[in-house]
Amino acid sequence: MNIAVLADSQNHSKEAEAIREALKKGDHTVEIYDVDQQITATLKAKRPDLCCIAAGTEGDTGALQEMLELLQIPFLGSRSESCRISADEKISMFSLLRYVEAAEEGLAVEPLVGFKFSAKLIASELDTIVQVCEERIPGGYPYEVRSLAPEKTATTTVQDSKEFKDALKACEKTGCLVRQWVEGIRVSVAVLGTGWDAHVLPPIDETKNAPVSLAALSSSDEVAQAIRSEIERCAFEVCLALGLRDFALVRLVWDGAQVRMAEVEALPSFAEGSAFEVACKTAGLSIEGVLNHLVEL
Image (cartoon, rainbow, N blue to C red):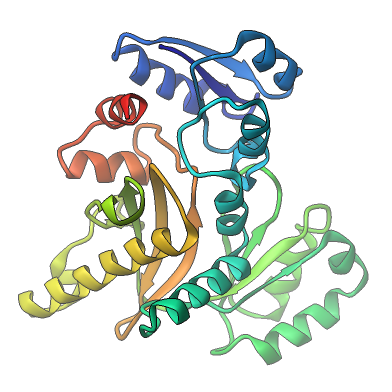
């Protein structure tokens, strides 16, 4: 099978190479294409059998998937509308609520309260943003602040108004997300498959990049197992509600009483050491095996 890996200059070496090497082990012909170099015309001419989009490209927001749908070229991962929904935390929570209402069930996961601010708003009304966030975000400081730049950026935790202002100023050209911070165990949960046939892999503790310890969840083995099951159920329901397919990574927080949803990655990193790769390894799987299995479906 002729497979095209779509990447940009930011992730060409790490993400795209990891995918190419994995697929080559399945005896496929794999070529990497730069999405910044007339990618629509290139794919229209080349007509690969299948495309795989590297994490960190425009595929995070569904742009590349939409282009592939237009060209009628199959691809791994979720469709464009699901990617757009999962990339916006407020829309994804709205979709989850609609799913829960339709299923007539209780909401299994609560969202973290957060607000997005444009670069223009930060530059012109920084003090007002600080005041409004202090009024609207429950629990007070600390907050999480993350740039809305296209490339993945680290999250900054701010402890007071001065640090908050500094973090906002650093995002004057990109805009940012400001989100409630809650104490708890932060986990990344990889999900493989589509719909009701999807499988949830072991949750990964984000601070240790290792499988979450049952002892960290509770001193009681029975309670810890129940909490882990709830975490896995929430991840499964999030993917089902958002219509994600093939693979996803759901970031959750267990705050000691309930599961809170932080974000969803419809296009997770497959690179060595990533949460998705660690989850696969913990489950006895390999990225090579997972990708080649999905390609053959």
